[in-house]
Image: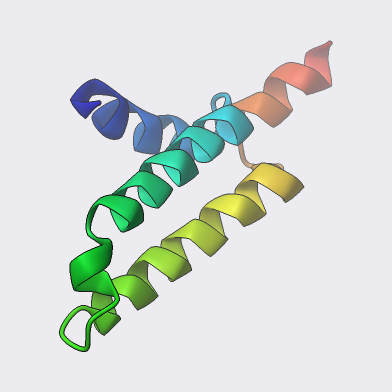
Length: 80
């Protein structure tokens, strides 16, 4: 889990296997929300829940729309 949380954000930022990496990070985000649900759904944890929703939404946008033209994935597929 630690190796994935350290390597997947780098892959998403560089645009290498972005959709798969973003989907894996979304799954990590969902597991974190589930694990800390008792705190996140309380009044003290509402800001943390909003952050998880924000990050989850941004990751899903990457999953559905792709990394864009400034990514390694785009450059590799361009040469195919």
